[in-house]
Image (cartoon, rainbow, N blue to C red):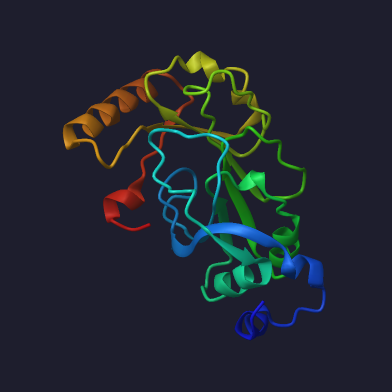
Length: 219
């Protein structure tokens, strides 16, 4: 851990050396507005973890390109930004032991959210907001183990929405999001938008989620 990061960490009296030294695979840390779901438009600091246990064709993250960062360096990087809201994303963040980051950030008044595929159960009390985006439309053999949270957000590729009947009651908010692939044509993506919008209108209580950050050209 470097001196700059230690200075930014504020020499917090409750920090443990073990927590500060915990290593994580990190793709990037950046400050942006949340572009989708319940918190769209609200600034957050995003911590994007490397590695994932699934490989979805529409994923826009190269989760195999990452660097090793100590928790103290992650803390120092996050504290450069004014937002007190953090989103842990990936890759799949729940492949990691997140308790050291929980202790470091919660003791400084941060709100912790995650975006997870739901294949790994999330410990009680770890997070303030849980968004699960199941990929069983692509991986029907993979069990969804995290069956409760705040936000259920499903990428729509034409699947039967009865697939989620057993999950709906565990979440307060239910979103369908059009499958958007950067390398596809405007017409291809537009067709997906129209299809998803039509399904949402016909299938309450689903709501439409759009990746507005991509329209704005920001991360």
